[in-house]
Amino acid sequence: MIDVHPFVIFIASIFTSNMIFSNFLGMCSFIAVSKEIPTAIGLGVAVTMVLSFTTVLNYIVYWNILVPFGLEYLMYIVFILVIAAFVQLLEMVMERYLSNLYYALGIFLPLITVNCAILGVSLFMVARQYDFLQTFMFSVGSGIGWALAITAMAGIRSKLNENSIPEGLRGAPITLIITGIMALAFIGFSGMVQIQ
Amino acid sequence: MSTILTTTLIISAITSILAAILTAADRTVGNYGEVKLTINNEKTYTVEGGTSLLSTLRNEKIFIPSACGGKGSCGYCKVVVTEGGGPVLATELPLLTNEELAKNMRLSCQCKLKQDIKIEIPEELFNVKEYASTVVKMEKVTPTIKYLRFDLGNEEINFRPGQYVQLKAPAYEGNDEEVYRAYSVASSVNDKHAIELLIGYTGGIATTYVHQHLNVGDNVHINGPYGDFYYHEDDNGPIILAGAGTGMAPILSILKYMAENNINRETIFFFGAKTMSDLFMLEQIKYFEEKLPAFKFIATLSREESPDWNGDRGRVPDSIIKHVENGENYSAYLCGSPAMIDSIIKSLEEKNISLNKIYYDKF
Figure 1 (cartoon, helix red, strand yellow):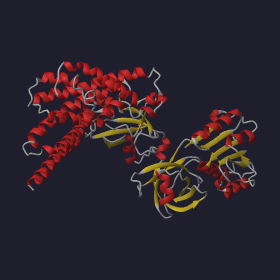
Figure 2 (cartoon, helix red, strand yellow):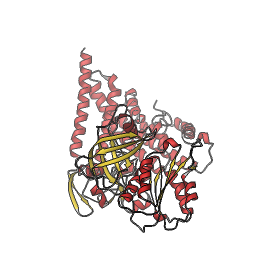
Figure 3 (cartoon, helix red, strand yellow):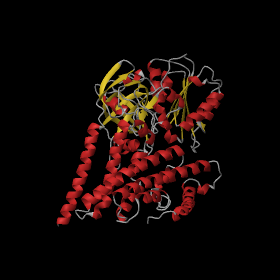
Figure 4 (cartoon, chains in turn brown, green):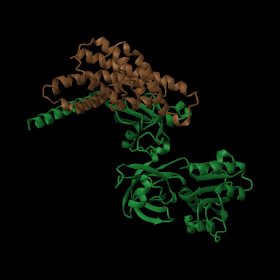
């Protein structure tokens, strides 16, 4: 176990180790859904929610089932199973009790199952040997960081509509270039805290 | 050995626990119990909640037209939901116009039954039935179009000349999807125990099934009739009929109806095709010409090079301009591709035919 204060991990996972700008994880939905701010916020909220719950669940499964039986190598399969089942469950509960939020998120919720940022956070949690509190702060922070990144990108892209961009760069290419520039900007935070 | 055992056991255990949790959730959280479905404020059904409106209605033997099978991509299954439909989903918005939204229209395949619900559907849809039919005749009338006759056994179909039915293409080798596709009925409305269709080969799921897998004697599920394209008993003025390829089907049904009831309105049938080999049903047309003295058939070929063809060349809209002098009092029935219909409507407007007397079926 490494000795970093959970709050430091929380801040670092939002800014210096942002899932998108420093790890480039969850790029597919980041590029596809960052066209408009409201949908971007919707997906950001959904990712944060799923991330916080699944990472904690995966922590429990990993340390209480996989490690005692010496089956750490199974973590990839087990993590994906847990994530898929949780998203399914969350969808059912939300459809019944939080139907407004359910309809607002629409198809994004099932899409999250295959978002690599979700699996990535669970794998980092293992690789960096976080304890429970650190894991929790790391997952919530990563979710907020991801939501922040996609919302910022959606803001920039909605402004881009009014500009003339060379045809070959429209859509995904310009988004990737902007992501790169934003990642450079986020390096500015790296002096603040460091977790890896 | 023991590693393999524990691995298998642990993975199975984790999977079973997750499956058990999901099943339990489905039984409790996902169980909406029985809900009341009221149609047109008259009929009330008590149905199982949690499934889509479209499939619930289908279980109750009420068939709403749907070509994509509930995927939310064709936009045919619109119904008016007056109460209990929940908010309109993002998946429906691209297929609903603002007018339709104002009328509380929804895509019945996307609208889930969660509470008591009230809907309104056109009366005609109660007339829609599903038929287990048998192919009794199949003939290639052009290189790409097949004429098919389906026997309905003891069942009877009541439709208006020009309406369409849906044919179910089951899964076959190379296609594991079951789809419904719409085809206009070519047979007479008095031919109540059979349906005739013209089906062109486009390489799609259903046309491939019909052209490469279907044989005489096979059973096919057909439901219908549907559609607001049909012959109108209006002012008995002159009529323009226009179509291309399989678009001839509803027009044949209309002509059969006119021939059987001796409706001798001045009628011109403009038919578009590429070459002489794409012309078909000419015997039938000849019969109409004998039976209805005021009926005229004009074929327009776009790619015929042979000098033997002394009919019109070019496009149907040009022929209409050429043969129709003043279109006031005319009504028009058009069946063909959207592009073709749009260009025909333009030339009809040029001839002063009023828009509300132009009926068409775009496919």
